[in-house]
Image 1 (cartoon, each protein chain N blue to C red):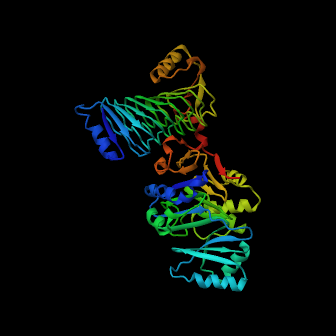
Image 2 (cartoon, rainbow over the protein chains, first blue to last red):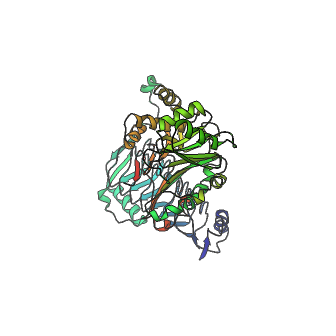
Image 3 (cartoon, rainbow over the protein chains, first blue to last red):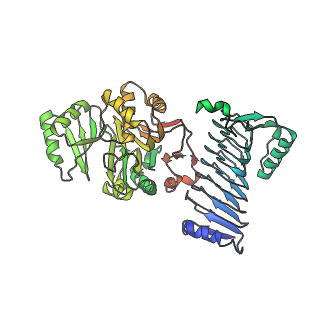
Length: 227
Length: 299
């Protein structure tokens, strides 16, 4: 295992060491010490690495991740795992706003709470939050799944495309075109799989499912007079 | 963009070190606000019937001694004062209104940065580190302190446009964000008798709170009204004589982090600014909720 102490090395040096593993992996396990809220830690990894970040991370931690398994042993700032392609990012504490923004694949697990706009414009990632999510979560979410074991803030799933949303607690309000849907057997199976992959022990039957009413997909000529 | 930092001490033993603890917090927010910086420190309180004013004059060589002597003789009052770089702190045995009236007539170029029993506001154009050194922040003592590093978006880079803004006796405000209805609000507040020094949107927020408090609102009520009447983006930190308050707008796109231990409560735009505080590794660290305010005050 290679240990990189950010009290001594720069973020660029850390990220370069991680990127150097892309063509040929010579070191599979990394430990990052003293992150101290710095931004852009472990961004742009393109290799099956295991990265443990010991402390709180700043903005965009593990952004653009491909294949790697990144664990933040603390809180994460804005945009954790933004535009992730594959792999796993796990936040042991809370995540700030826009967690998993635009992410296209992989699994993001937040063991604490996530702030506003969690999963904004997500495009295929699966996100599991053990705590609550803030307002406007899943805004314009296109595909993937968002699982919330706590409560969801205002305007959940506003202008939603095809993300599957599962919430166990209260939903403060649903956004435009987001509706509660029937939980069928196939959805219970999907949710069971998501919870198992995230290592979260919850009863899938206690969740409700939300999705797109698909009323905003196309322009309706009946509404022409409103413009 | 702008950066905000605040430190409120629960453990009085740390009061002699507040400047030393706070200086790295302010400097850590340089990349969020490199054009000007300032801070409001609370401590060295004057007694009942006295007020403390932080005064500034555009001329660096301004003769504060003469001003002090004139105040003493013409108004026949007790006074002590000291100079700190570009500002002077006057402690006067008098009412605020009488002092304001005299200063506006006899020394109209003197700007009153703060009035209260405890507060001193110190701010300048330049890098936060330079401003901390100019005012010897490191050596300062006090019970709590809030600061701001500015990256101007809505108005000019001037000392007057930098934060904190005074909002009344021992009250001040720092702001990260931008208000979209500040022009209309400023006109309305002018009609209510609130005066403004700049075209700055944050000064309007400060003026708004001043007006609400004059209307008899408590700080909590004034902040509730602010949530209704201020349109735009904001994270505010507000200094009071006994503590400080933090409030974010409902959209909450401007960042804020809070940390609490047995010794202190600290606030910053980014966690990076808190990493030098003692015991931060084991502090409770969390993000304040949108449209919610948090107040810490000693009784």
